[in-house]
Length: 333
Ligand SMILES: CCCCCCCCCC(=O)SCCNC(=O)CCNC(=O)[C@H](O)C(C)(C)COP(=O)(O)OP(=O)(O)OC[C@H]1O[C@@H](n2cnc3c(N)ncnc32)[C@H](O)[C@@H]1OP(=O)(O)O
Ligand SMILES: Nc1ncnc2c1ncn2[C@@H]1O[C@H](COP(=O)(O)OP(=O)(O)OP(=O)(O)O)[C@@H](O)[C@H]1O
Ligand SMILES: O=C(O)CCC(=O)C(=O)O
Ligand SMILES: [Fe+2]
Ligand SMILES: [Mg+2]
Image (cartoon, rainbow, N blue to C red):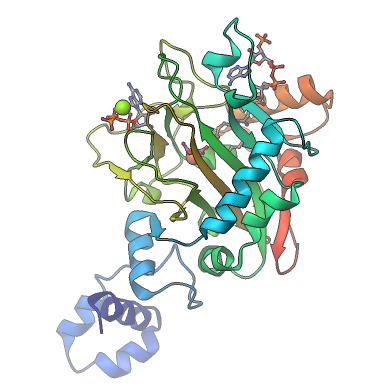
């Protein structure tokens, strides 16, 4: 048995104290060692992950799974994205975003300037990503069996236009989510091609999922910041960082409190990734009044009012609109 499996067995024993005491009462050292073992909090006991994967997520707040999505599927998602870029396909709710350096420039935009699609839940081809059985199998370890796809993105990080606006500031995705409990939410992010430091891979601060939700705001970047790209006001710059270099099809699953961002794209290619945030359908909406999320609540409401003329729509409503059931039963969200 691996070291991880041993520790996991110990944790289960620890959780079931009545059994542990009968078995371990003869040796006080054993009992003492159980008391130093943390309980599993971030993953569910449903065999969706290996013991090593569970422990790794508990400790670091993410796991990387090699080669989870096939080349064939990724090529199909890329074609679906190209159809949208060329204006050959449009879907209700889809937000097509351009990098701020391009959107604010005087030059005529071409289709390639698209930096991000958000909310592709009505595109049957792109949404197939959210329903891939091998992804849902892993997602269940965090959400349980009733699964909602809450937020979908295809990120097409453009070559940096020279102003460093292609960076994504360090943040926690939970800042955008008015639902809880936090540990029943997870993001799946799949590289659509090789991603590394040159084209702006994900950068994570391992273990930060064990902290709290921090205050977020626009970073003070000289070259400008993309709409809604809030960053953490103060984070410890000395915290160890990890650059997640990934191959096409590799997928990272990460906790919504994990501090992460992505660097500048210093290549001439558009760096592509596709992602979905999942939540347990039994999660509930919270009121963010008086919390650090008040600023994003206000900004989202301003956009829905301006873009769709719907000023009665709440931040929570916008999430209920885009959420889609992908497994089990739609209960609360
Ligand atoms: C609910 C939030 C999402 C949840 C995210 C979960 C965690 C993920 C973390 C993130 O990814 S945070 C980023 C989330 N991004 C968004 O939710 C998308 C926000 N973007 C939009 O809603 C639209 O792209 C935007 C309103 C900014 C532009 O809409 P249009 O496509 O109608 O653009 P248009 O060309 O008409 O330009 C309207 C104005 O927006 C400006 N603009 C366009 N792209 C921009 C940009 N990228 N950054 C800043 N401003 C931008 C543009 O210059 C112009 O400014 P002016 O009014 O001053 O002329
Ligand atoms: N000056 C800065 N202020 C705030 N955040 C920053 C700054 N520079 C980089 N970041 C953020 O740090 C993360 C990592 O960026 P990036 O990979 O470019 O770091 P780097 O230290 O420049 O490494 P590299 O040498 O690989 O470019 C990204 O989320 C990026 O937005
Ligand atoms: O650069 C990326 O692909 C990650 C962006 C990100 O973290 C996000 O949109 O929440
Ligand atoms: Fe993020
Ligand atoms: Mg850099």
